[in-house]
Every structure is written in C-alpha cells, then in structure tokens.
Image: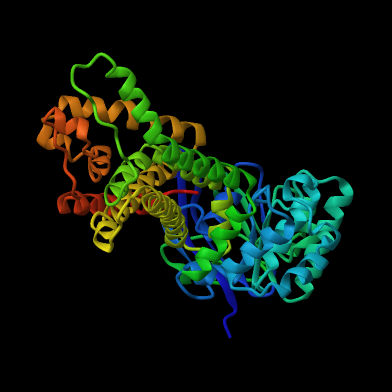
Length: 248
Length: 267
C-alpha cells in the first residue's frame, strides 16, 4: 500500500525578483495531519496553490498518490485555499451542486457534508448573505464532497472569532478521525501544535524543518546535513552522543 | 460534455443579471425587427420629399430577402451579446470561482471548453430568435409563398450563427486575457469601434479585409434594395466560402490563444 500520499521534489516559484518557494522537497504520509507553518509570505499558499494546479511552478515536480498530478487526481483532494470561493448569487446547496458535478459526487452527499459542518439550517441562504464563519464552513463542506482522500486547508480559521476558530479546529479533528489525510497551512504555531501530527516550517520560501510536531516542539531537533561522502558523514554523526538517530 | 453543460447552466440559470440582460436583448432585437421597415420607409420618404424621382418603399420582410435583411440587422446587436459573455467570464475571475472549479477537479481545458459551449449556446439561441422572427414576418408579409422562396436565402441564418459565434469567441478571448470586467468591456469596445477601423484605414484594402471584425461583419453584406439599385449599387447577396473559412479559422485561433494563456497562467 502507498505510504506517501504526496511527494514534492525541488519545487521553486518566483514572482519577479521575489523567491516565493526555493527548492522545496518533502513527503506527506497517508493519515497524517500535516501542518505547513510559517509567517505571512513564507510560501505556504504558493506551495498549496502549486499542489492544486492554481499556480504553475518555475521548477520541480510533485506526485499525488505516486502519480503525476492531473484533474482526475485532484478529484481525490478537497481544498480550501486562502478564502472561500463561491458564486455569491447562489445558495449553499446550489454552490455545492456545482462542486458535486465537477467532482462527480452524488447530490445525496450534500446534506451529509452540510450536516457535518452544521450548515443544514442555512443551506438555502444565498452565499453572499451568510457570515464569514459560515462561508469558511461551507468551503470545508465543499472540500469534503466526493469523499476525498486528502483535505487541504489554507488558513481555515482566518478572520474567525474565538468560537469560530474552536469550531473549525474541532471540525478538522473530527474529519481527521474519519481517515482523511489533512494538509493544513497556518501562521499560528498554536493551531499547528493543537491540530497537527507533522509539520513543515517555511521561512521566505525555504524549508526550515519537516517532521513530527512532537520533535519540533520538544528537545529533539532534526537537522538535514549534506556531504560529498554521505557514508562517512553518517559514521561520524553516529559517534556523537547527542545524536539520537541518523537516516539517509 | 453534458457535465460541463450542466455545471455552466447552473451558473447562469440562477443569475438574475443574466436573465435581465437576455430579456433586454430579445426585446430590443424583436422590436427592431418589427419596427425596422416602417422606420426606414419613414426616413426615406422624408429625405426623398423633394426628389424628382419617386423612391420606392422598402420591403424588409418578404421571402426570401427577409433572411438576409434581418440577419444583417441583427448583426448590429451582437456587441450587446459580447458584453454579456465578457461579464460572465470575467465574473469567474472576480469571484475567483475559476480557482474553485480547477481545485475541485476541473481541468483548465475543460473550463475553457465550458465557456466555448456557453458561447455556442448563446449564438444558437439568438440564431433561433432570428430564424423564428424572419419566418413569422416572412409568412405574414409575403404574398404567394412557395417553398423555393422560403428556403432560397435561408443560408443567411447559419451565416449569422457563425458571425455571432466567432464574434463572441473574440469577446471571450478578451475576457480571459484581461480578466477585469470594466477593462475587458472597454478595450473590446475600443477595438471594435475605434482601433480596428483605424488599422483597417491604414492598411491596404486587400489586407484590411482579413482583420477579425472586418472578416466577421463581411460574412453578411449589406442587403440590396430598390433604392441602391437605383443608384447602381449592388451588394453581395451570397455568403462567400472564403469568409466562412476565415471566420472558422479565427474561431479556432481565439480558442487556441486562450488555451495557451490558461495553460501557463497562475489563477
């Protein structure tokens, strides 16, 4: 069985002279809640945009489920990128029907996902007339349509009040319990700490850390080092008492 | 394809602006069709009051000329349809729903194709309005009708379809490339009314006739009338295959340009 659901190799993207993403490589394991942590402008949304074919990378490649990405594979991924994006004149249900048609999901799933995000009572409200919190929840409902295997959430608690934030976090945890792999981008350490199992720390488009959250927050630090002779480096590192483990 | 039609149908069917603009277009065109003959004859009789020669009345609605006359008249209103197309395509960028569509699993090619289908159906709908209007007016205003009379110049109807389809694909291209509603409408109108006529004026006639708007409007030439014949003017009463193929080539070109643009573009 495929262990890695996503593999990224040397992804780079620049906007003019600004390097938004610099040779990012990483793997995301199936079933994990993978956080992408970094301040605004660190490359989180650019990374997710590339993974969803919204942004074209300058270099590098990525593989979903071990395959080159295409539209059919994207149907196995549900996503909320930056902000909810729906037709303002349509109701929640009408918007979800469009997404269901795109994803090839049945309309019977709509009530189910609306129930999951507690929006059933507002399903006939026009999108333009509901609060930001409800819009966020509708976007999560849309992302879950068609039973995707991966859920990508970019700053899902942005602009929400404390209760809304708690609601969304609980929702993410309950969704994770259903077996989804979740990739969550946030600039809030607290959010990643509370929700995620693994984390990638980005700064100015560069990877600073990638690994389990417990390691990132504990005494353990994971370092990536390179040498002309990796075997020799491995031997030397293993002799250092403070080094717990060495992997190639 | 059915899936794409269903998706786009939902986007427009529940949109009040779409229905208001469509109703306005239909009302305007039908009113012009019905009032054109009386209006032209009134203008001609006023202008020709002191003319030594008696100017004959125009008859727009008689078979088989009704097809040509109304197709030519309807051509003036295609700019209105272009604005509808631009509004609804640029909406996808201003609402950022193009992102949501692609993220949810629609390929960029499918998205483009859904808009080509949208344009196709608009062209088809307005062609149907032309066909029905011409048919009804023809039956009402023609004496001694026979089948040959009805069908002999009906080729102007598919020619009108091609004229509108190509023109709307051009509007679609402007919408995709410029993405901002006001800007796209402004630049398109500027090109249509100002830029191309100036370019055409500067170029030799043989080259200018291949400019897109010239080519599209040249599909259906000005209808002949007894007044024009009086002055020895004789316009083309057929549709040239060169124009048809050129319009088809332009249609493909507009779609290919959008495809190449979308393929590389960050959404």
